[in-house]
Length: 182
Image 1 (spheres, rainbow, N blue to C red):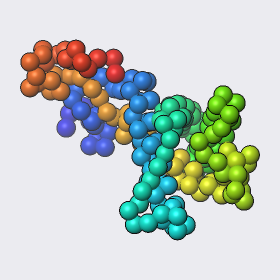
Image 2: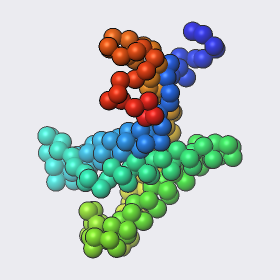
Image 3: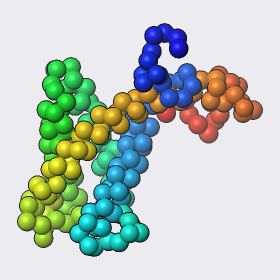
């Protein structure tokens, strides 16, 4: 390897540009949908509401919520690391951020649409039907996992010669259908 980079720190993709804010928003929103589908399928199986088909579900609203939430989380983790906070404390504060984002976006949807796609009103640990305090361990684990996701997404690069080497376009310019600003 060149430049003293360890295998763990090597960029994913060819020598190009890191993902921009909009691309990370899209990636984080897609990851959020996947996390929600995995979570709901396992919770439904564990509670008897689901079966071994492991059918998970989410809502279209969740893409922008996860996208913006994880972009905020990226910034928060950077600030917390620079402040020298332990991983345990960072995950705890990340959990609080998850609750805050879920509550505020749910309240915003109620204010604008008159309803929220998720309704926890029947749960014993519900706060205004918008969050469930008994989900704290899950949000804590999500916050721990997010640091790994931020590091992985931060290594992804688009562009560079190798990415288009086999296309009719110039090896140093992306095809018109894929903007270099991603």
